[in-house]
Image 1 (cartoon, rainbow, N blue to C red):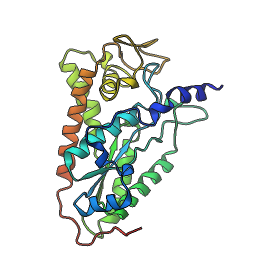
Image 2: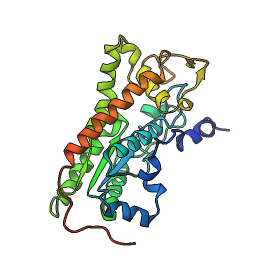
Image 3: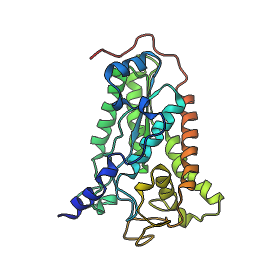
Image 4: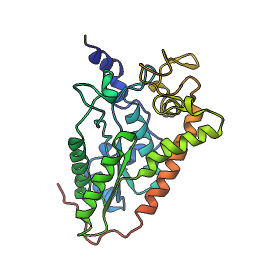
Length: 281
């Protein structure tokens, strides 16, 4: 059995959705609704579509390959529930992660899945246009990974230029989401006495704590301790995850939700268009 296949068989179930749903989340997930149920939600005022964007990549020896997908799914559910007029699209799990031959970035480890940037951007654009066609007026990209933030901005700007000719509907790249998860959360941990070298930038204290708060099954543990072979270097870790806890992670999750909800509300304050673009299938 190849190394890649072994990794997929070991971690594939987690990639598909290891994170438990937020309480009450069944009513906000598009893929859990029938089309008449979705149309009724839109007619009742659900005008925001959240597009959670993750990534399938290595996260050291101690976290599953689908960490980003599980995290962004749960956070999108919580954000939608807080907004009250939002629906969550299916998670986009295939994103640019580097070149395949020769392998670069996270493609140096088995199990990481990558797309060329133009393919990824075309997928985002088609997703946004599909949601607009369904009747949503605001499409919000929630990008959980730093590597494709520029793509989110490019696609949002490109579609906005087109949609501006016909009304107030928009696509929002929503950088506040990633900034809260990355910059803000690192500052919160530093304020509690954790050094930057331990917090890390990938699969370290911050990343692992968030995963534990989403679902402990995303992290391999030995008793109360995170199981790692090396805390930095060839195992794909930047930082030291050994003191990570779900309690620390919950601080970050709550902050991400709070900041993102406020940013979406500020960005989507406009009346619904007079003509609904939805067409009945």
